[in-house]
Structure formats: structure tokens, C-alpha cells
Length: 581
Picture 1 (cartoon, rainbow, N blue to C red):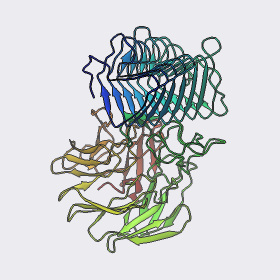
Picture 2: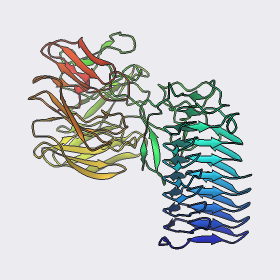
Picture 3: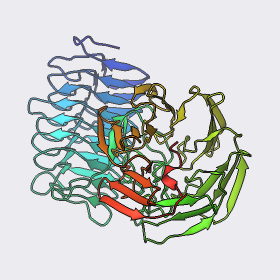
């Protein structure tokens, strides 16, 4: 429903009770009046579910929605974005009004003309109860880029990021009662109180536990024992992705691998996140915060944070080899330098190292082409199990296709260009026809939703065909026929980058998922085996090669620099090269 920038869309009379579902309310304008999109009368009650309120304007207050005295708004699975006003760009709560915000997103709203509360303005005696919601990218010409509070707010499991306030309180400004539990507040900007502004000298202090505040300077009240508090000189990087569709009904910011918010929260009364995913999802290799329940801090519960080729669950890939002559696995633990070894497999088996059990450790595993059987040596129990899946001529392509934190057995059948996936999360066997003769299977999580995507690289044309599980099909031109596909997350944004290694020149070329630009650099020479992985645990895949002629590893670590290590003997196969043809 559009107002063509000439009239307000809805006005509720006093004491009205209204329910609206699945509607877009846009381009409304109240001129100098209140509530560009919606004006709620005194003591009215409005429930909005699956609603988008966008691009509405008021030269007074409440660009999207204005709640008059004692009105109550329930906003569920909804979005308020791109609205403008003097104060309360998204929502303005007047005397004794109440906003109940659940699994919703407030983004891109602005308060101008010296106004406050870019996202939400909470006026005298007003109340905000917000849970599992994202407040992102709002701006205010005065204070409170995300939220301006003069009354009472209770925030639980929210993400408040990338908001801006010209005079203070980039994320939240508080001058009365603000209770924050399990919220991620970071990456906001302001000259005073970058993320939070509220202290005895200006406003009032905050209270609460299990919050991650990127820069808590400018605020008081949150204790260091049960909160993660950064500062101007030592801010906390929350390691989150951009605001995007990560599933669910509203846009969210997903936690990336190695985010300090993972498993560090406490959410005993709320058992889902903004997407509706169950929380807590405990990553067994990430210790929970003292007294916490293993929930992630903020609106998003990450269900996957495994580092490929990490045998000791320290967040770093380990160098390692498979010795076909004896069917032996050897690897060097990055955590303590020890070198475990053991027999598992034979010379004709195809190694398939991955975390099949979901404990955060890579399991020794292989697929036997002659019988189509999988063999997995459990890192949890030390015992092995086996099962048939596939046939001779198939290519093993194990990955976590269902985002349950466990690698799924899967094969790509070149003879009919079909993928067969045995989902460990209980989804049974799925299959999809995707590809053509001569294609190389290159599964990875290209859209950052925690699910591996079916994808192929076509050497004959240098094309990548990627069937993204959330963002849909994309076709990219990148590479030539002799290149090796080395797709991985080189930039640390939680999404795999299209990438190739050129054997003839030893050059790496990476197509950055976050910008669409590419980078290239030489590392290696003809005859080397590319072995990309995150060897320094910074959440970014490192370019690396194994030189069989000298049994030497060369790692170009993105944070820790170059490492050169001799490990292996002639004839060994580098484990991190297992899925590179």
C-alpha cells in the first residue's frame, strides 16, 4: 500500500484494536503532522506481523510509525526501514506508549533537523520490550542513532550495529532505565558513546549481563565480569556479516567464524533466534561463558563454526599427509606441535577428511571407489563406522549441506551430472541434477547461510555455476581451463570466495564475495599442490602450497605471516589438498 509521498497510509482512532498481516506500507507522508506511515491514536493497540514499513516521512516525528499516549504496538517478524522524521525516524513512542518488538529489523531510518532516535525514539514514560531483533544502519542528527531512550527499555538478544549519531550514543542513548541482556552492540559511530551513551554526567547508567559492547566508553553500569566490554583503544570486533537475507522473514547480520559472540551468552527464557532457529546451539569446541547457557550473543544464533582440516579443535588448520604406501595419516597439531599418526585406508582410497560427528574436529575418513563405501574414524570415540553411498565413477563431495554442524556424505556423479547427498540432520537422501560433462564439483557455502551450496567449475569455459541455497543461482566467469579451483573464505566475511590457482605460474586469483573485485598474487610454482586453509585461526583461509619434491609446506598466513615447514616424504598426499583435482 503506497501513499505516493502525499498522504499518511493509516490512522488508528483512539482505543482502536487493529491487526494487520503481510502488507507493505510505503511512501506515506504526513507533512508537518505526526506519523508518516502510521499514526496510532491514544490507547490504541496495533499488531503488525510480516509487515514492511518503508520510505515514509514526517517533517515532525515518527517517520514510519507514531504511537500516541498509552498506545501499544506489537511488531513481529516485520521490517521498518528507510523512514525519515525530525525525531524517531523509524518509530516514535509518545507518553506511556509501548513498543513490543519481536524478531524484527529496524534499519536505514533517520532523524534529522537536530532530532534524536534514528531508529526508535522512546519518550516520557514510554516502554520498549525488544527481543531477537536487529537495529542497524540508522542515523540521528543529535543523539541515539539506533535508540534514544528517556524512559524504560528492556532489550534481550538483539543486535544493534552500524548506527550513527552526530552528538553521541551511536547505538543507544539512555537517560532513564535501560536493561540489556545478551545483546550485541558494536560498530556504531558517534563522537561520545560510540556504542552506548549513558552515565552519571550525561544520561543514566545501563544494567544487564552477557552483552558484547564493541566500545563501552561513554557508558556506565555494565560489569566486566559478565559482559564483554571493548574500549576506544581496544574495541571488540564482533566479526559479523553485513545486513542481508540469512533465512527467516527479516534481514539479519550473521555471526562469522570465530566471532567472540559465539556461545558467550545466556538466553534461558528465549529458545529461538531472529530467524526462528533453535538456541542455544552449542559448539562443542567453544567453551561457554561462565554461568551462560551456550547461546550466542545477539539476535543471530550461529549453527556452524568448524575450521576445515582442524584435527585438534583449536580453530587452526593442521598440516598433514596421507601416506598411500601404508594407508597412514600423519598430522602436526597446531595446538601443541605433537604428531599423531595411524593407519586408516589403502592406496586406492580417496581421502575425505571432514567433521562428520560435529565435535569440531576433523575425522580421518575415506571413500572406497571400488565399492562406494565410506569409512569414518570418529575423533570422539576412536572407533570407526562404515556405510555404502555412491558407486564406482562417482566423486566424493562431502560438506554440511543442511547446516546441522556435521559433514554430510555426498557424491557427484559425472555420468549423469547428478548430486546425491545423505543429510545427517535427518533430511534423508536428496539429489539434484546440476552440471555437465567435464565439470568439476566445487561445493562451498557461497552465500554465508551455513549451508554448503551445490556448485561446479567448468574448465572448458572458465565458468562457475553456483546454486546458492539462500541467494539462488549465479554464474560467474573466472579462470581458464588449466586452473585449479580453490574456493574458500579468504576474506573472512563468512562466504566462500570463487578462487583459482594457476599451476603454470603459481599465481592465486581470488574473486572477493563482499566487493565483486578480485586480487591476484604469486605463491608457489609448477608441480606444487595448493593446500588452502585457515592455518592461523583468524577466520580467513590462507593461501598455501605443499611441494612434493621437497616435502615442504609454504603457508602464506593472513595474520601470522609466512611459515615454511618440512613435513612428509616422497609419495605423500597433502590432506588439505584432498578436494582439489
